[in-house]
Image (cartoon, rainbow, N blue to C red; front, side):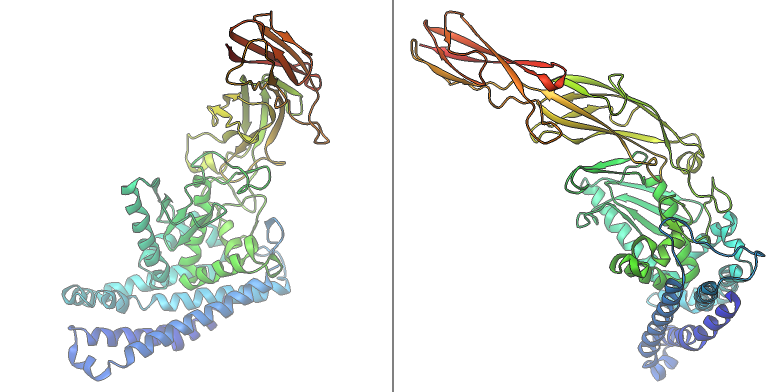
Length: 546
């Protein structure tokens, strides 16, 4: 059915897309100073032919996409179950999907043949350049035929699509393939805009990707309106949110990451494989395919195979193969995995906080320093280590997923195996450790450690008078809450210097103090949390007495 679909798409393209485009571009060249006499006679054909061909191309791409998307039974994760080559009679849905996929490739291949007219047309405002390109049109025609043949090879030999050399040729030739230009040209504009922002301090990282001839921009300004960090591709350009880590997982606190925050395992280096899968989609199926796929992904519910189950997404994901995301076995990763093997998520080695494992009760006094130790491994070394030989197989990150509102707890060396954390205020803390192989987090997500931190908080007046009582308040002291959400009970022990001052009851949260002499009085409170292994903390306040 791939061949039938390709022939059908090629015929449609010849009569309704490529044919009218060639006429329109030829007329446009005639209108320009290149061939002005003919242009004067036929100039009306340019807008009519161009608009009509473009609408036809979009409409036919949409119909083929919808057929493929509705026919394909996309699972929640893993590879779509297809009949392997020579593995028997295809399933019924495969006839429709293959027909639509062939349709897209056949249509795209015929549009590629417009190249000898497309390049002179683009430069028609520069007559000398346009004439030079027209003079080399035989060479352009040879290039167009070569690219068109490359496009349709998977129609006759579907397994070739998973070949790294083929994917490289397809990706690089996309630069001069006319059906990709509506995406690649816009990608160039976005790349320039993002790059200009670097002059004004915006974080931007540029990385060329040589397998498919793509270009990554990591950062820029075209992201602040997006709640969830993400990436997108436009032809041979792809763009990643600056909030996505280069090689380590990133933690997103509430509310962006939900009530307790969340880690994202996909890194910029790992996302390269997914986004260059979109590069191959555009090269094989055209720019309108990727725009239709974007609408499908973002505006349709998963019940209609939207979101990560969108047809364009599952095709692109075959270039990465996150084990938690569905993918269609068409493209294949350029390194690391073979056949229908998905990515193997990383695993945790020994992870401790002050030598204690996850789940242990951790109790500290405010201001305490914690030693964090964590390691992870990746059995298949994919994608991080495979993509960049010599690089670590995993990246790690420590983060406070929850902490008291005013704590501002800090971690030194958060992306290393050995880190140090300080818990400055009393209350409940959750420390989380995450690992990524560049594509995903370990099964079960990050490891968590819960800590109860005791803090004595003393409030005293600015000044006091001798023989007149004043109040020292320790009621804001805390050690966090229990499992029912009630404050953990504290015991209070007050003392004062000089000792001549009288304390009514030194075991209450709030006390009355009567100084009997002038001078500075230091009021000290030690609180102990019975539910936190007897951990205590001491604080004091000074009151000048006159």
